[in-house]
Length: 362
Ligand SMILES: O=C(CO)COP(=O)(O)O
Ligand SMILES: O=C[C@H](O)COP(=O)(O)O
Ligand SMILES: [Zn+2]
Ligand SMILES: [Zn+2]
Image (cartoon, rainbow, N blue to C red; front, side, top):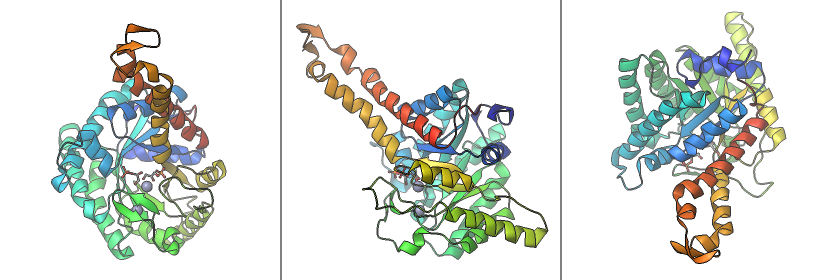
């Protein structure tokens, strides 16, 4: 039995998202969530998933969404980020089935000051639900981890009550991801905030599970966005086992039911992580790992190497090392050099899938 026996190809919504994550948890693998900023990057990620027969998660950040709509648009009131996220979602929905893989369509960190972006996407989901009986996206992340815990949870509860009835998954963050995210600079946060405690994770579980089962928790275990000199990031994915055990114990006390690894956990800052850190995280119930920085670098690599290797063909429209009258159109056509970035991006996505055990899963 494979993933396609459990969920269909194309964008998943509602309980299908949970069915996919349950299947991943039961079979000890996780799915990478790759940040996409254009149709080119989105297609390259889908292509990788198709080639290695894997389900995949595509996500847009607030800045990535604005880029999708075009940097030339004003982002006053998050207008461009809302429009870009909707455009990305429609594009991905339009092509996902053709790639033949199940896709989770997600939006990334949304801090308090970015809530108007979230509100705009939520309105689009509600309108789409009215017309099609399912939301436009699969899931969204709320990141109120900079706020006091009570406020973080209360805001998640408020939004989840609106999301659950239309079949949207919620990812929330408790404990802070270090480094930089969307204009939020977490480079100097207190070290303790980078490691979430089991009691705090359970508080989230308790509050959200009263509304519905379709949510995940990005509990911090030293995660940092970006890639730094070795030794600067101290990841402790083994701590995630304590969250699962604590939640199991509390659930059993409250209901009498035994729950094995009841939490759906999310790994932020996947770039630069070791294979060992990744497999420990998966063993402890991580179902989604975000990768952005490494795939950004991978997209550049193909284009950079093309420019280096074809330098003599890219200086003028006519004239190259093969002759002064030779045209260079087939070298400067963006479909040629952008494609080189797509190929190297696809390879890096395949590597992320391999690290997570997400290969040949359809
Ligand atoms: O967590 C991420 C996006 O939310 C990605 O982090 P990296 O850029 O470190 O891979
Ligand atoms: O927050 C983490 C993601 O890598 C998003 O990054 P971004 O804001 O640069 O798009
Ligand atoms: Zn955060
Ligand atoms: Zn993140």
